[in-house]
Image (cartoon, rainbow, N blue to C red; front, side, top):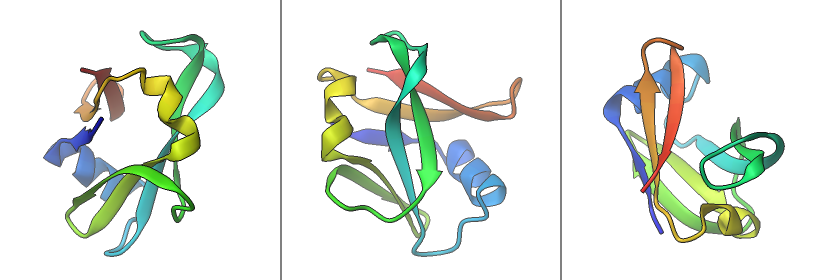
Length: 95
């Protein structure tokens, strides 16, 4: 499994999450909402340092990651993080 993040999404994170070089963004499973992978669960994100990262990607001086305990959610899919102009926020796709 891998995380892919577009340049537009990286720019959104840097601006909206006020990221500096060396910062971390965690993608995590949260109860509530829905996704194409699991009804009743959705994906969240937070600015925090990793504890037990299973998957990481470095883009433009920052690290984006998923913890080992959340890897079940992806069910063998890759995570593609893009920017949605309509909602002015990230959009998640599963490949």
